Length: 190
Image (cartoon, rainbow, N blue to C red; front, side, top):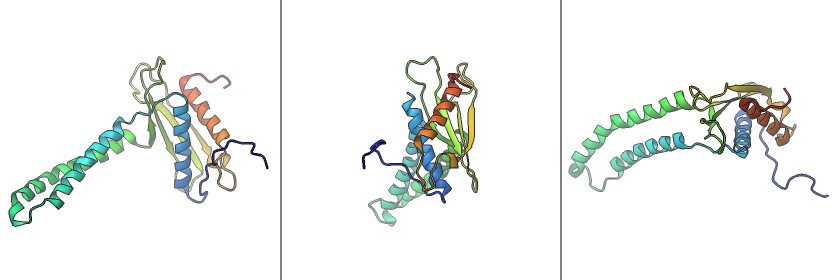
């Protein structure tokens, strides 16, 4: 039997697991957005990794310091003194997640050569016990003069999956590309 489609493996999700469905759709959204010339902005992720690394380094130092207890008493007191900073850093991580990230799956820079000075924030929702997937595209800097109004769509995931759980990428890509065009004001047929 001759192959009529692309040679890559089809993307498949467990239709009984909404987290699996959302994860697969979110990955596909990231592919669509980056294929349109948007470069992922990983600065926020890097800040979170740095804060987490600092917390881990303090814990590792306290646990694996080479001297035993009576000799390392001053060092342990110093590590115990650093614990409030660890809690503060953890609080900062939670604050970043709650205020900046929310439901965001992708932050981008503006595409090279565009007149936009802001990138995108792409976020999604798939509520528990629901088949309604909501995808939102907004400006990374909503107060910027070049920021566009946020756009979103809500559709049933059953439109994009076969009964075997295979994602029909062509249909999904068209919907996401149409949403990007709506955000950029480039949609031809409304």
